[in-house]
Length: 213
Length: 336
Picture: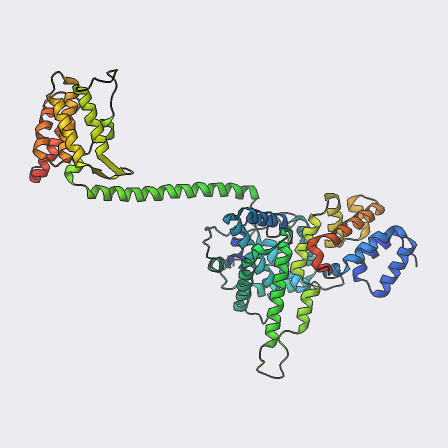
């Protein structure tokens, strides 16, 4: 049995990109190249990236929403992709591209959830298809946006801060274990982490998750 | 109870997930050890973000995170960015030891299969954008280390084929250009070939026999200085130029001749053949005269001069004999 990512052609499509889907530096570089040169090859790559990004976002959400059918999912992907594609040249700060795409996906999914709640129910006593909590969840725990953004923000830190931050935030290693693995005294780890967290606090890619937008 | 430095550091890193009472104890401990204040403050500032991660051993791992992992780990043929790879390693370590989590992951994989059933992403993308993407086989992909030892969670049977490095892709990209150029050359050759045969079909048999190769029209300066006006050689050169200007074509296809110029060339060539002491260009002139007359559909006149050429020993004798045989075949096909 082949992998559904293969059967659907999503993997083949992502393979047409010249970089990983989550290589934010490459995506922003491509976007800047397209904005300055109007190069159609760059635009095609950008569209493929956008399409794959949107698919992944909604596919991730759909696993948790059993009422979302495949047809609705494909329509959601298509509509959101087309809307974002038509507005691609409207972003003032190129660095904000990925955040903008992520927030637009979140808003599209929120609108979908609201439309589901407004649908008429054939049985008056049946529960709401999508409780409002699902919308709140989008604000508090939008992991399919947060994880790649946080990972990219850590990769943007100075090299000497990256490893210690990965261990602390992504791998959740105990403080003592971090100190042991990096062969640094606890005081050094403390200073490194303080600096790293302060920098993450200022990273524009994380502003939305920190309530700064 | 006092905490030692390592315990305090540990508690500060767990701060976003601690109960409120425990958080107050940490804050109190930091007041007594102000060197930890900066770290606590920076963690507090990141608290809304860190609380969303659901990575502590106490919290159930979110379904969304598992789905994100299942989709992302193999979606792209390129290695994961370092931090994302570290995050997935953490998830995989838990998946290897947690059977319940593993079962949830397998259920999610089945849901993903249902959602992707019948999806044709390439056709969908092309329909939305109006683009035509290049054909490319979907290579089954497994990311390299550090995720090499990933749990076999079947989003489904994940092939163990090696990853494709970016350099190889760049090489393939350059080959793709070579292939495109080769296809273009073949396509142009086919088109040109078709036009060539069409062009041939448009010509009469006499025009084909009378075709004058450009090589015959090059003016040979082997005799040194330009000849004096009105000499046989000067007339011959003028005849060559006249024939050259009478001919026109489109990239060698659909040749046409200006009949007035051909008539002028014919009279010049006749003058050359009649001039005294014009032995050297005489046979050339007679041969060209035969060709010009064929182009002007003067078969009798062409045969007359070609017979003279065919009767003399010289470079054009055999060609003249061939043309005479071809004319014979045209007039009496049953003899050929």
